[in-house]
Length: 367
Image (cartoon, rainbow, N blue to C red; front, side, top):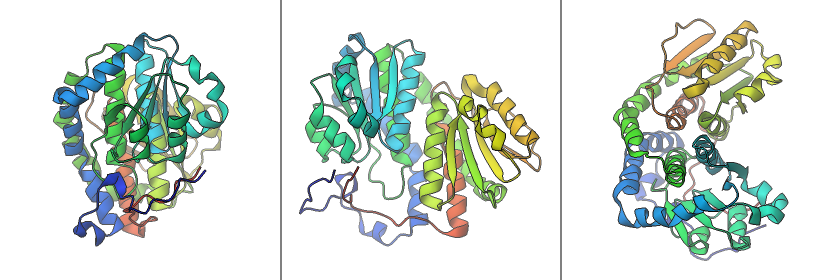
């Protein structure tokens, strides 16, 4: 499916880029957008706490929670990863929910769409062909949009909308993933009747320092991973979304092979393939921390190298590189854990060059 061409430029996020951006390298743009994440996230949290228009939309959406049927979170690419976090958190709060790839849902699940209580569509661009078609094909069920582009097709097709507030993004998804994930967490909390402001504020207290600390490690991370034939990213619960997003970041920006797994999924199969050619980035955070540490030990025992991302101190070794993060409340570790593969990616592209060129306009959106 191809969207009809538009004579007017389809600028990223609906905004013409400033002249200074047009002359920046992809490496410079990527680092700049990564380092924007603390203040972009703070801006979103302020808006979702105090902005009357956003609060009105959140209150309008509260009725979805009382509908029969599960709450469905849909997305593609990075937005799918954000959807995972929102859905997992809503499940943890006791409300039936699940996440799905928007393309799979479009082609295989339309006959059961009227059985869900409500749908949350997340898209940074608002122009993804699958999501545009889903907006058009909605059978009339409650539908909400989380989007970074108020001039997009999806924004025009959906009446209940929440902004991502990440600004234009010209590299791969970094700040849009962070803000979209925060929006999904806040909306899920709102639907479940859970308070979230104090947890978000505590995250903001340490988030910028965490980012700076992790990005200072980028050359060490790159050196540790250099020569690996496979990089596996492994998470559970909220950090399963981080694992998928981290693998996308490494593959898109650096061109290195990386694959995401759930902790249980990795243990039942891929663990048997671990050897000295593998690096596993394991997110041992939240309620799955002990399981992550045990998996790291098992990977090391098979000769594999491990980057362990946790909130605890661990001694490093030749095959074991611990990265300690500030502890945050569940599910906000989905925002801190992603900083490690982002940092690794920057180290890789500084060493070997970027795999992507900056993009300032949306191209043709195809399935």
